[in-house]
Length: 195
Image 1 (cartoon, rainbow, N blue to C red):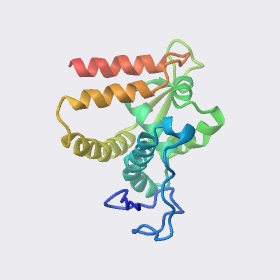
Image 2 (cartoon, rainbow, N blue to C red):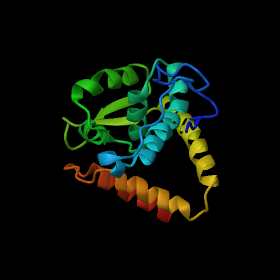
Image 3 (cartoon, rainbow, N blue to C red):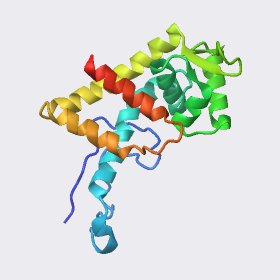
């Protein structure tokens, strides 16, 4: 039995070079049945997460492309904006990337005036990052696009379901970060919720 599925109402071509048609291929294979060892795998949720992530980052991706930026720029800008004075070392830990990976992206954001870097007051070796007004405007625009998508999805659920969604997403995040940066973020999020 063939089931035609449409992934999105507004197809985008974001990191999807192999999907070039708006309609499903007539020659496409049926999804594999959930049998054997695969029966215990959560293909339904795995695929939903793939597609949700694709569309969640797709809106900002289109906006960032105009600046010659990508997802790495977005991730850096997001955390620098949300946590002013974030240390470069903590940013590396949050993003789980190497200095080398961050270097090019950070340099471009600094050179183009989206972020400024200051030395720490107590430790001159610390490099603290702050978003400039230009950077703040970009992050707010990108967050607005993502908030619109989140709000639309949540509007299709009962109000109490939003808490279930948050609990699920928190449970998906590894809590074993040795630097405890995520604990700081969760504390901030919990504080925002109380206000």
